[in-house]
Image (cartoon, rainbow, N blue to C red; front, top):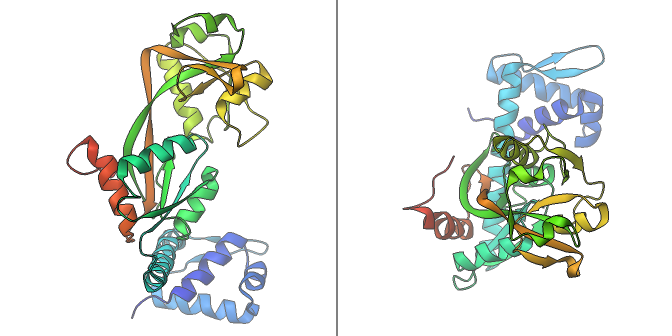
Length: 300
């Protein structure tokens, strides 16, 4: 007997809400009906899925494993339904792309151009999302493809490295470093460095810190209080430096200056997509971007 996707949705809701009362309200069910659904699912699986405490309900290890897979199954079902609808409406060539702020809109356009999506009749819908939002939309099927610098692939997602960009440093106009043709990472010691995510909770911030440490520099990291803005603009407001991938030279209307790093440093672009789902536009994009790195792309 196959798993009931509706009952899996009930299990996920109870785990996310931490109890039956709030989960029942969210699902518009009575608490008794929700409890019966979970008990039926546990009998079907043959193991206990939830630890029912007096004040809080938590998944057992078996329950957590099923919840992780349930999210992937739900995303696959939603993606299949959405694909059928788009084909039925003559929209089979659509590709929904989300990108984190670390990947600029210009870089996304560059990748779409390389993939030749317009020539292939693929209409791309692009939007910037923070990592948690992107992860959720990929897992729920609301996005076909995510573009990130260093976000890991959670359960239900596949990741491939498809490109890399040269890393540079932006400084305020008039900064002594702006007079130099290039700087080394080691030259940046002691300069406050603007980042957009907290160390330890942002994979891209951790990547940048790791690059500095490899060069023998312990960066003075400061999180930018204004989220979602282009990195090059942060230096104009704070007087700090920031790592960017924009071309060298004047930036932000002349209020900032971008300098090459020497020796050159590169940062990756990773594609993330829901595992076990189909999307013709995504397949074309991946084959024509990551495929340039060799014969086909390599999922990580």
